[in-house]
Each structure stands twice: as C-alpha cells, then as structure tokens.
Amino acid sequence: MKKYVLIVLATLAINCFAQDYSQSWKDLNYAGDSAVYHRLDIYLPKAEKKSYPVVVYIYGSAWFSNSSKGADLNTVGKALLDAGFAVVMPNHRSSMDAKFPAPMNDIKAAIRFVRANADKYRLDTTFVGISGSSSGGNMAAMAGTSRNVRKQTSGAVTLDIEGNVGPNTRFSSSVDAVVDWFGPTNMLVMDSCGGTDFIHNAPNSPASAYIGGPIQDNKDKCLLASPITYVDPSDPPFLIFHGDKDRVVPHCQSELLYEALQKAKVTSRFFLVQGGQHGPGVHVAENLKLMVDFFTDNLPKKHSD
Figure 1 (cartoon, rainbow, N blue to C red):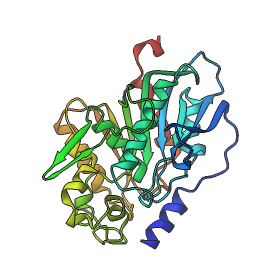
Figure 2 (cartoon, rainbow, N blue to C red):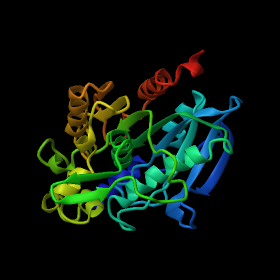
Figure 3 (spheres, helix red, strand yellow):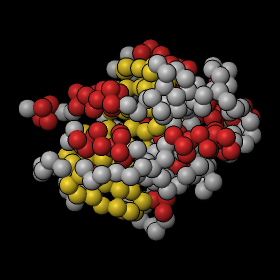
C-alpha cells in the first residue's frame, strides 16, 4: 500500500498555479460544520460574465486524503477556466475518516451546495459537469451513474448513496456530463482484468480501506462503490481517459465502464492513451482539449447561441 500512496502522491501532487482566474473563494464549508474535509474552493474564469457553467473536479489520493482540493488546478483546472467554466474543487472524507459511502455522500453534498449557492457565487447551474482522477475518477463516475439513486441494494447490503450531509438536501446532486480520468470502475476485478504493481485484493489495499474490509470478502459493498453497478440509459454523457501503461489502476477498468455505457446506449467516448501512466502522459494538452470540447458540446443550447 505504501508504494501505491507514493505513486499517487507523485503523479497527482498539487503544483504552483499562476493566477488564471478572476475571482476565487477558498475553504467554503459545504456541510455546515467546521471540518477541513467539508471545505471546497470556487474559481471563476478571467473572462467576465454574469454567471458561468460549472465543473466540479475531485482530486485523486487513493481515498487516503481529506484535504487535497486544488490538485490539478494547473492542468485540468486551468483548461476549464480558460474555456469559460467555473471550477469547484471539494475536499471529502478520506477512508481513514469514514468508510464508503460517506466520502461519496460528501461529493453529493458539494454538488448540492453549488446549486443552493449559485447566485451568490455567479454559477450557472443549468450545467453542472463533474470530473476526477484516479479515486476522484471513481467518485466522478459514481456521481454520474448514480445521479438518480438515493439508496441502492446489492445482495444483502443496502446503502444510502445520496446521504444527508449539509443543509441543502432539497437541492439535486445530479450532474450533466462526466469526464473520468483513469478511475476504478469495478473494483472486484482489478486484480483479474489487468496487471498492476500491487494487489488490490489485499486487506490493506486502498480499495479495501475504502470499503472497510478486504474487497473479495465484501463483494456486495464493493459493487456498491463501483460506478459500473449503476449504469443505465438515464446516465449523462461520459468521456473516459486511461493510459495503457497504468500500473496503478489497470486500463481494463475504463474499458469495462465504457462497454457498460455503450450497452446501455449512454453517449460515451473512451480514449486509451498510448504510453500513458497513472497521470503522466494522460493529463496532456491534447486530452485536456478533448475534455473542454466535450463539456462545451454538452452545454445547454443557450450557451452556444
């Protein structure tokens, strides 16, 4: 597990960011408490407008960090800001703070906060996209495929996926489009569908820590934490990126999600990035442009008039 953490921190580290935004709000608490893991940042583009369509971006940390908002601001965030999107970057509880579905409940609460406070922060919530990398990719994909789900059952396990974090529970946590960067999508088969540098089935793996026990001993809960479980024709459009040299999350994870989306006739595209690793070689200009174009193409018509 230590090797996994070092890889993730090396590839998804927060970098210095030249100011490419007109206004920002830092450390807004979306849950109505004082916890660090319930804070988010909002950035508005330099181009002045009355309001901006929104993309929520979730950092990757193998679910081990509760305070890494701002990661990838100089890559994914900059590309979105330059294209005219407001960027929202939330923290969430780590697997050390609380087990699934609590961290996912936090992301849903952050989306509801965006809608509840749209006027205050000049956010146009006729479009709320979501993106994330690695564990953040898993959570972004979960937000997409479970957008109409409150509780879900697998076998003998029923979990509250929506949750009731924060004061804005009357608002929707739905998202309108998803960009998943190399996230786990069916954690039960990470060891069997492709090679990595460690064992996901191990009791101390990131996935096992997130679930609260060895994933193969907790199959139903593991499936409930896997976006592929929720795929149906009502899902929003998806764009998926994964490096073919990823030794942390095997690229078969993205292939499985893409196949499920295609079977359900959900609008979706998948790019297997040649030579891409777990971050390096994937968050590159060409792919960032594809992301921006994808979100732009899915804006309501009024934005393109």
